[in-house]
Length: 245
Image (tube, rainbow, N blue to C red; front, side):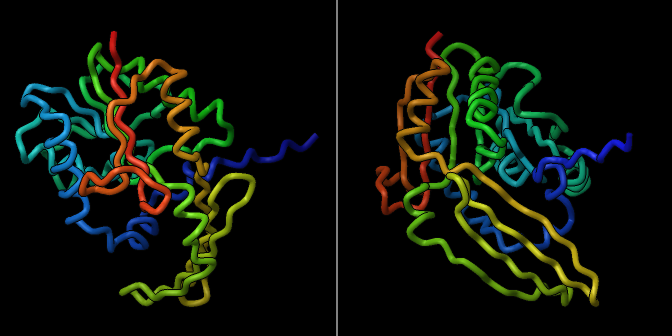
């Protein structure tokens, strides 16, 4: 009997050169602002061990490193980690799965919506549990996530753009079974390439419940990178949990 090829999860296919081109506009000011909020809120010592989980090329990792912190980056994408090491050879970037974090840390960061990728709530909670288990007692987890209510209210169904290289990009967005799904089509000289993003739209209440179930005590919640309070009108849901023991 012919065995069908198993389809890979979307996050195994997407984080490549095309991903870099599409998100080239990421604002470094936003990254610096959030790093400033993290430092001002948690006041970590210079010997604090930090893990940038889902680090990509190491955009946040580099900011912490330049400030003198002991920071490491972990990402599933070999492509992005390789690019990050080439750009910034001094960074400690590793390829790995957030469900099996190597080592232990005082502070773990999930920034720019690097959570909620897996198909089931149980898998996503297992990833959160992996974070908890990898923290030293008294350690903190900082999750920068979508605000589900904001996304539902402000979702743009379709956009078209052209990259500097001339490649045409069409993005279609929809909410399906509690997930925000983005279909991404690249067209380059008649050659089409297709990707998909699919992120679970956890409400703030669901995230808080999940944090408590795995053992975290929630100590802060922000709605933006300036440190505003959480509300349904804010674009982000930033939750900070502490591992007590």
